[in-house]
Image (cartoon, rainbow, N blue to C red; front, side, top):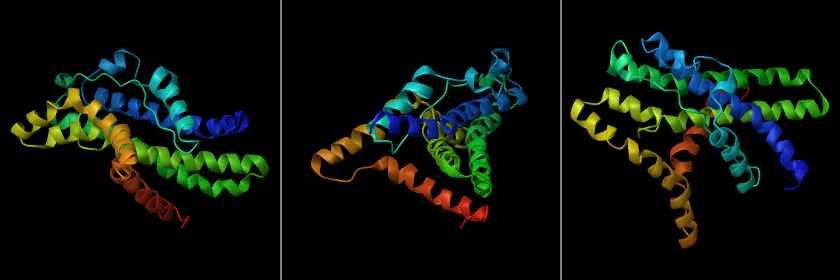
Amino acid sequence: MDISTIAYTVSVWAIPVLLAVTLHEAAHGWAAWRLGDDTAYRLGRVTFNPFRHIDPFGTILLPIMLLLASGGRMMFGFAKPVPVNFRGLTRPRRDMVLVAIAGPAINLLLAVFAAALFHTVPLTSGALREWYGLNLQAAVWINLLLAVFNMLPLPPLDGGRVAVGLLPWRLAVRLARLERAGIPIILAVVFVVPWIGNAVGMDLNVFWWLVGMPTSFLESVIFRLVGLQ
């Protein structure tokens, strides 16, 4: 890609990614605050101001690296995790589940909202029309991708915290112990396993099977929901 193509692609993805990852974290903080833990509130993280949640690596550097590495086909990122003191929640096990669900839930709402805004694309014209449509398409995709990815049942992802809160105590404790190994496992699944598959001539894109395919399915469901298919 040349510089102009890269700049245009970044402009298409930047706002959707920034809003998706920062509002995801803000939703966690808001839910925790409403359920009794004011840790995030005292740190100024219960806000929908995206600049309070930006992580230099996860929100800026990683998306750009993925964009360049994929030839402009993929961008992904994360914001600074919102601190939550689960012991400060009114009912820790139940509320932990609600706090965890809040992030993916707002991503689903953002995806539906962005899809509905496609009805306003005909109100624009020329280069703005194409850019606006691509922004909305990126917003639908990245929000659904974040929602699905974060609901994988592996700590420290939101789905892992939901599973810990719902499973019987003995199983919950065993799953919670995986939290320190969770990120290395995720990185291995996303990057190392597909690389090994390419090296041996096999399709081992586990990330696409677990996240990409469900995201694609949800995208088609939402577009039908808002009357676009």
